[in-house]
Length: 256
Image 1 (tube, rainbow, N blue to C red):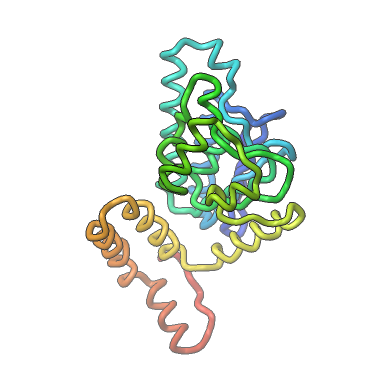
Image 2: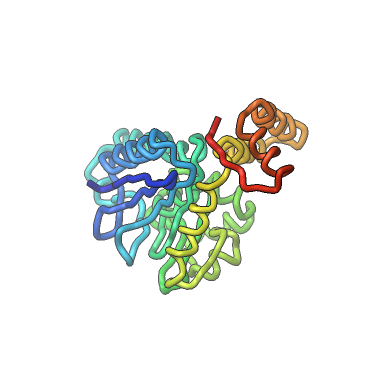
């Protein structure tokens, strides 16, 4: 298996495991899609996306595979990658990319598609170098990176195909947290365990309100916020949360 999935205590784990570089091909994408389905079906609230290897998070698409396929087949694979990567935002769980090795091209685009990116310090690189192959970052990079760090900074990186250190990636906003390498696992585990103990419906609603509304104008975004809030007031979890607050006790959320 190139991608494995498991869930325990409402925390899901998706592990990229295609040595040596977790480069993806059509079969890999189908396994990633199945892994996302698995953690969603298991009612995970938060999901860690990581690599089994130390050197690479993922080097992106298998370049040799591009050469072996026709242009039409390559375009079809990239379109399929869009469908799979889009699920990170569309599904309810919060997906956290834990990066401790090279995240390049489509590999960084996997991380970009996740909700939160946590990177370890180290001597590896993060970036979208596709232009150096005569291509462009075609699995979300040209759209997600500018939305994350701004148009000028994203163009500066993508037009040169420049990959940066984890420290510079953090300074630019390409990753959301930077921690010492020996603290990455504990930091991410603490994050997802905390989320898993929260209110599932509210956490999913916050995520969807941001993804659905942030790229609209403010008035439309605020309407999205109200749409996500309305069903929460009718939920058992909200009653439990507010009741627990008034009774000065910890809430017990059931996701209903």
